[in-house]
Length: 321
Image (tube, rainbow, N blue to C red; front, side, top):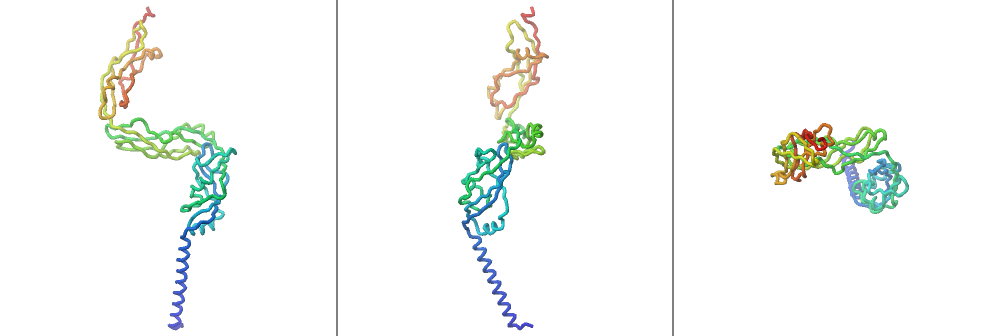
């Protein structure tokens, strides 16, 4: 059985070893946390949103660069020699080099993409030169974006026009047979309740099955204003009746519902004239003609007539005599 002295000596040795180990660990951590400038390499595929092209390049490119990073980065990179990354590039940085399907990105542009080597890595210079990636053509079709919406307003508030999109069309990629059946792409439902002011946001797009979209979400806005609404009985006139012709129509007056921006309409609303156009009657089979108006002032949001048409009949004409 070890004596007390032997046990004390062993304890001292263990403590010494532990102290040396901790010292080495602290020294190693300190040195690895320092910033170094060395040459690093990365094998990458490119992905982008080039019009009419596949989303990912068919070839990969070796990027060699002088980078500034911590020692931990270079330690990790030593074990990743065979890893191939995929880096997303802005389509504006990829230039067609008149070699068909090849697109080139310059050294200066490559320096901005820290994702080539990872976060917290500064690219000082690219030594491998410009990079060329091959993007194959892909069947595509540009279609409008349509909103699917459920928007409820506070009393006396309404939309001024429809929803506006930052991008009102999207490119759809897929098999030609599928593209033929696609005329538009819808958003996910835009739902808002108790709206009392203009709104904006981002809506996701619903990609048709088996297709890819050039972007997956879109910013939108909707102008909302407060309004006042009032009704008036308005007189209906008639225009463009040839000399010697008498056109009878009914009703002579209709109920007009005006909706104007708050606080109140100006006198321009009273200047609106309502009339039947004889030229419409000539084209009509049934003799029913829509009631027309003169120029609508800007502050008028909407105008609703009840009824919207008049029954018309020629009662006399010189040609019939």
